[in-house]
Picture 1 (cartoon, rainbow, N blue to C red):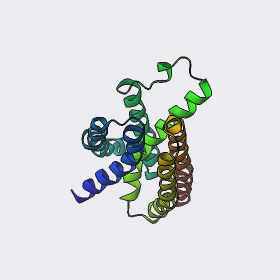
Picture 2: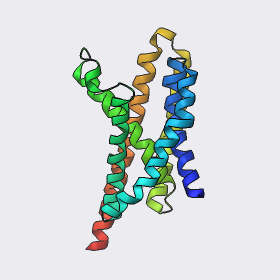
Picture 3: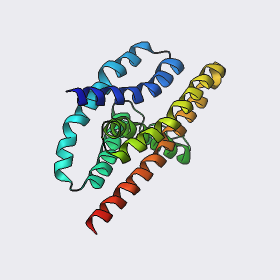
Length: 193
């Protein structure tokens, strides 16, 4: 139970950093923010926690399990954005394709982080802990800066500025995950050799 609560808290923390900015600071929508904080993300994270055991049973090897977890729940989150939030690639036919692609990758990265960071931080293995520390060394100062900027830019520039910075931040986290997966696969290859 303690691990589940830690998983829920960590995932909710990574989620609310973004949600506070995009829902409360930009849209001024307290009701939606509270809904995401107390209902949407706890339900999503409970689903991730419960179903990840099944995913682990279907896939052999820790490295493959970690990678499958990252992609599976990132895609589930993206489907939530598309079909519940209305932010599908086809929702704005006038959007530039490259910008839409970056936005979609950013949303995927956000949901993958919300689902994967708790798994990473609750894992006692040294590689997970090292990766978690590296993520925090980037994430905390970066998002402190994003928060400062979001309150300093004029209201009419806030949407583009904040969304761009949030997308960049979550896309950057993929570099840490890529390094983690590379090292994990390298370790599993060394063990089996």
